[in-house]
Image 1: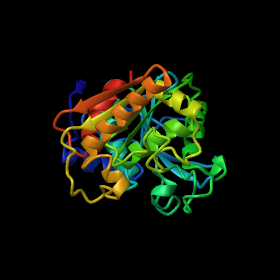
Image 2 (image 1 turned 30 degrees about the horizontal axis):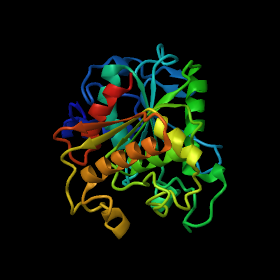
Image 3 (image 1 turned 120 degrees about the vertical axis):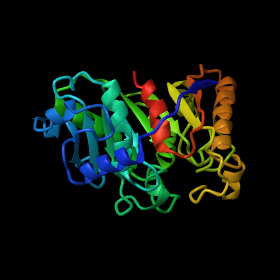
Image 4 (image 1 turned 30 degrees about the vertical axis):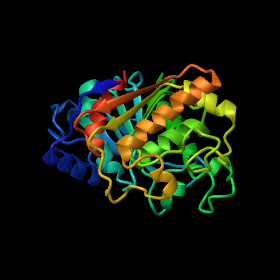
Length: 313
């Protein structure tokens, strides 16, 4: 298995940057480290987007308006820079996720977008982690336009248009509940313009198994074998922290089907990867996934972001 280095923002830097975001400032000198070049560009705007940190509403995609937290290193280079869409966890704290990604985006020169799926507009795991595919009932397949999954492609299109960009694809990363979002998005949106999927530290999975009932497997998920074949061939870098082993973590799902996936997140991720690898062999398709173990990382987006940022280019 490939090993990635780990790292995280200091608490002081993270809190400072989060405070700047809450105040709606374009950038803060020294927040998260890396100098003040972004701050110097803060007044500049393109298509309503600004250099440094910012926020705009994504509307008209089919569901509720979604606030999007942004970081753009430079408007002069923005039309060519890689775009990373980051999916937050169950806390729906998009501002914190952005704060933890900004130092890496500044250092490595890429754009970060963090859509905020609030608990008010997207209540519960069904509406967010599970993509709102079946709604709150969990049984009736909804109009695809209402899926939370369906906000991502319009988000990418809108940002590229606003920037006058030439980007044709993006990286999709998620941690914890966001990782659940990402690996299910992989199943349900086979035509998405994602060049690399990076799910990190999911609490539980929809296994690539038609014998296991949805949402723990694909039985009744509305996914066919062809869609699964496509998913298994995609460029996926599954990241796991080897310290994410707390069996008593407050948000760790403990239903019997979840416990069959492993005692903790680190074990469940390894089992998910191995099941996918076996399924690719069974279906006779090339397996495009990789497994990365982040040494010393626990259930921390900050630690996983440091590893994931190295995979953007």
